[in-house]
Image (tube, rainbow, N blue to C red; front, side, top):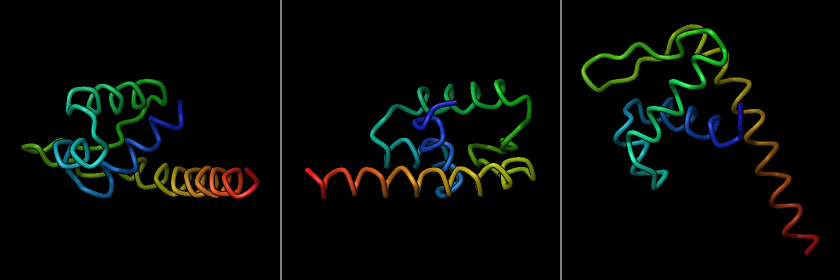
Length: 86
């Protein structure tokens, strides 16, 4: 699992669609889709139910989102502090 995968996962949670999340992240929809699928395979759980282009978060996905949000907030704070110290 990488920070990039967590950022992609969080964006799909936020926007509910691969297409919209990919536009916001400036990556292709297939790249984002593969990343989410790889994360699901690595964790062994389904994070989203797919429904006509909509990504509906599962219970497992909701739990992971809480952790991902905390990790991403910490990463953002670390980057901001590094820039401040520069």
